[in-house]
Length: 151
Image 1 (cartoon, one colour):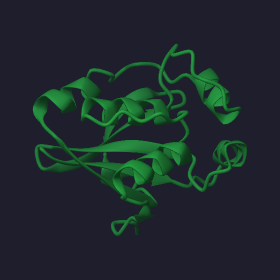
Image 2 (image 1 turned 90 degrees about the vertical axis):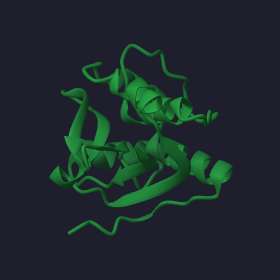
Image 3 (image 1 turned 60 degrees about the vertical axis):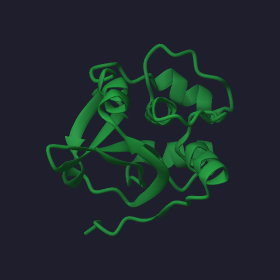
Image 4 (image 1 turned 135 degrees about the vertical axis):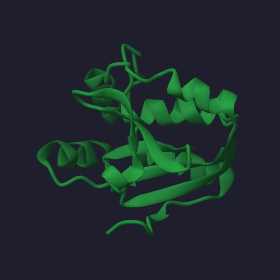
C-alpha cells in the first residue's frame, strides 16, 4: 500500500497561531498519509469534525516527512478504524502544556503516534505536531521537508 508519510500544515487562522505559539512549533497540524485506490489521502483529526479521511489534494500540506515505514492492509486498517472518533481539544491543550493526554478522543498528533505504532514504530513523545516530527527524525533520520505538491 506504499510508504507511511506524515503531512504537516501551518494554518493561517487564530487557532492555528495559538497552537503554534503554545507548542513552540512551526506546525499546527499533522496528518497521516495513506493511498487508497491510487488516490493520495490523509487521515486526520480536526476540531469539530473528528477523525476523517480526505483526499490529500483537498487541502495540500505545507510539509511532509518520510518515516521509512510502509503500510499494509492490517496496518492501514488499524488507523482507519479510528474514523469517526471525536477530536479531543482538552488533550490538545494538555499536550501544549507538556502534560500527558487523557484519551477522551484524538487530537491530530495522537492519531499520528497511533499510526506510527501500528506500523511498528513506538515513540515516546507528547502529542504535538512538532514533537512527533522531532521524534520521527531522531528515531529514523528522516526530517520534515517542504511538500512539493503545494500550490
